[in-house]
Image (cartoon, rainbow, N blue to C red; front, top):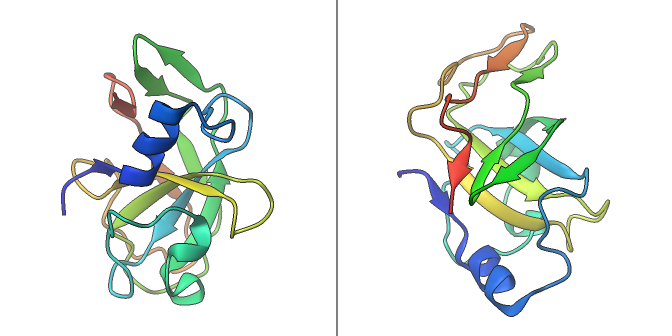
Length: 137
């Protein structure tokens, strides 16, 4: 699977949904084990990731988020002391509302990500974004 923006997120942007803003301080990224879950374009919310307990290995909040000319960027991310021994191959971006059933999925990335794939086994997982930003609409 190549990097992709979720269809339901695109729809939310086009309809002006109030929960689609990326610069509200609640944009998160999850480190995924894709053995249990791959990209499903029709997924809309974090709870739609069918096997959260076996798929999401760690979460982090994006800091210093910028949105310029349709480009999303933020500080690089470190998942601290990831105590999991499964291989992690992808990142899942979502807007965290505190409720998985209303936390909107934004993007899925598994291609050209510095630091992935990795088997953490208690180590930190550092993700360095491209100089071109995280993604551009």
